[in-house]
Length: 325
Image (tube, rainbow, N blue to C red; front, side, top):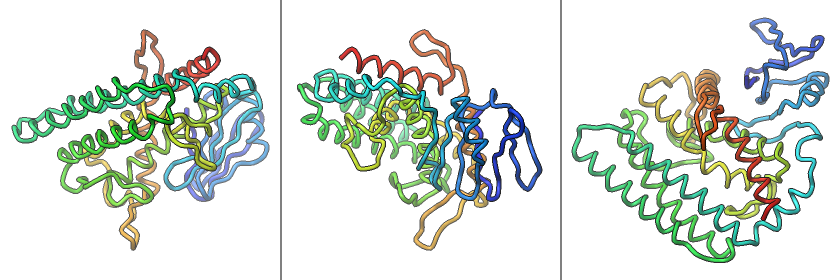
């Protein structure tokens, strides 16, 4: 269970060996055994006793902003206690193994994009032709990444990012074609979003960032030392690298919500500058949808786990990759 405290005035306290959620609707006791993570939005609060209980039970506690991204977190000192992993992580960046890892991440992202586009059915010949053209172009970018050769990722990263960006533009252009009219968009927009789709997607990506960053920390990896993305002050750039292979999960959820026209005008606010921001009702729908999707059991490389658990497994495997490089 991922506990989200997003309503102004909500507080999380400790009662006995349990958590106690207090808000305008009343009180609710929740066993820590049922909680995997806690997300706290502006206006909600957590007591020190509840924070210590979360740390004791190794429950990830995140403080999130209006876009769903974590801006701070609490975690047990047991997380990431093996400094050897972080030393080897720094060594890994300058090896040919880093080039191969980045190629794997980008190729998987592009193949996920192709798979989602191929899952869209239409009887409109014109639209079908545009989809076919787009995924053939994405395939060509994927093949360029596969063929990319070099010893150091710093030399290849700008080119890889260019191909990845071109692929993503084609992908989102196609997604917009199939949206109901009020959900159509001209391009990806971030900080802030300029339409409903991007508003939802940015928040869904924010949730994913939190999951990926937490998984890296628990695996003993420093999320602030990137491989593909350049180091930026106070930015978890390795989380930006790893999330690439999982973005399609957020895409799929948001695409489905828009096709079903679940999110209406009450779910967001349009500011004077034309930016779109999710309101509490919209966050409730999206957070529940993303968490339900991440809780589903799927098979990856012969292992049946929830999608969220697969993120954690990938982080642990990446730590071993650093150690063995």
